[in-house]
Length: 299
Image (cartoon, rainbow, N blue to C red; front, side, top):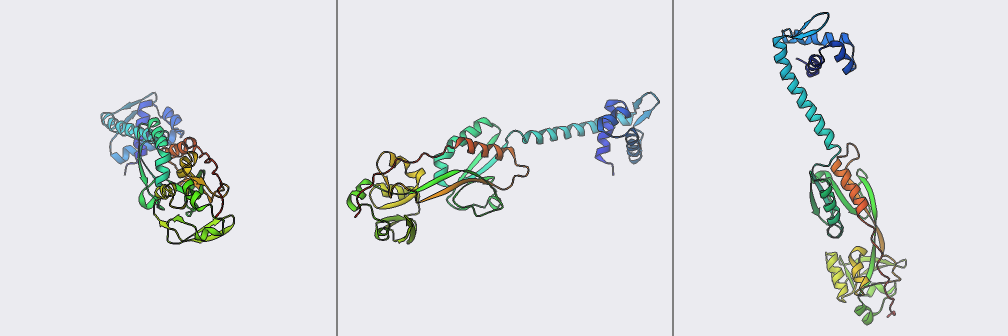
């Protein structure tokens, strides 16, 4: 079988009109060039070059063969150039997953900047409040909030998000702020029938007066005076700033949750992933702390 590398070698020899110059260009010996061209001619059963002490001349068969091989060489150059260009400029579809709230509040500006900077790129955003499997679901990048549970993924920390206990001024005026030990019997808004909340080192199992499966609904219910909710600063900060909600217990966060962007591997990282991760790190500004709430009297 004819070696493709020998076909490309033949193209180089013809273009340089010299075994010596072709050998120098390819970093091999003149003898190696001569032997490989001779083997190529033997395999094809035709003479491609006429050799004299002064020059090389392409035979008729060699000229036809050169045209075909030169076209192949050009296609190889184009393929190599395209692959190298893809390593520089983001192209193609990037699939990104994010928690619903984070995606709605933060990613619009990041995505807009990314797509404007890289016109050959496309992006699909999947909003989902669940753990995603990047490989199984064909995702390139995911935003992850909370503890990381897959050590096989590459993770880059973007920052932290505080979670606060909040209630409306109307609720606090009526019920007061419960102590840490009174929280067990307080009117709370939760996400399951029984939850464990911790305040000032005291853990309490609360029985929510309202159970929901949506953070925004929990925040709206707290604003309406239904009860105490435990929600991210990202969600409640506007209501805290304008006085519709107050952060309880000296404004200390209920917890801090790390925000990471994760992707499968650092090896041969596609430009579309690298540039998007960099955009996240530079364009997503840290969330300012909400204004401190006013402490109310205890019940």
